[in-house]
Image 1 (cartoon, one colour):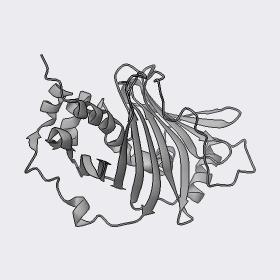
Image 2 (cartoon, rainbow, N blue to C red; image 1 turned 60 degrees about the horizontal axis):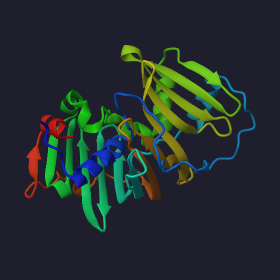
Image 3 (cartoon, rainbow, N blue to C red; image 1 turned 90 degrees about the horizontal axis):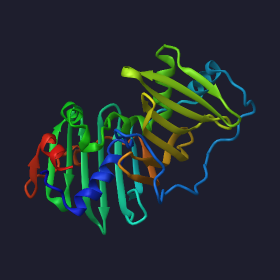
Image 4 (cartoon, helix red, strand yellow; image 1 turned 180 degrees about the vertical axis):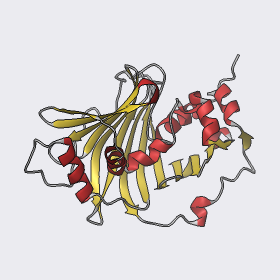
Length: 293
């Protein structure tokens, strides 16, 4: 019989499921979860509306290329709200500190009452996840984590960076070749890219300003990831950064990130790069984590 982790560990696993990769992925597809944090939200855009509302895929790619400015790094500070399926499950609120630098560095800290709740460090192919209330530190490689998808609900850690730089990620896929499917409705465009083993990812863009307001990933007919973008900020008058992001997970996670401070192009400092201290923590592998989560 598998050992059940404590209540703090269960909450942390939900938070990590969302924030480590900004994607909540599972094996059974997504449903509509009770108490979703962004049910009554409306989109906030920093851009003026486009004059033309009926564009081809080539025209969209050219427009995005013209305005594209990818920041070298992004630092966010704000609030993270984590909930679970069912109205009996209370939401948890965290103060959030996040730093990301493509292609393979990220540091994420969540705090409650000024104390660190979890700490995540991605450096190259190495990943460390500390659950402080559980006094546990999980260490391993990204490849090892992929062998145990239940630890983070089957997520891919690279989606963290792609979500913070969603427009640049979309552009790379548009210009790499292939033939994505393209659809248009009254208010949106949708671009679909085929993935290996019958998968598909979908980007939905607003016709008003060509900002991505939803990303989905499918395995067959199962929707296994959804990210909704509710607010962008134009930082330094040229960098489009998503600052309000909602996620849903097949495990029942409902997550809303709202940033109130954003900065770009900062260096990776020694403090950010420093390994998570392990002196007071029990160090475990991702294989051990898979047995506990």
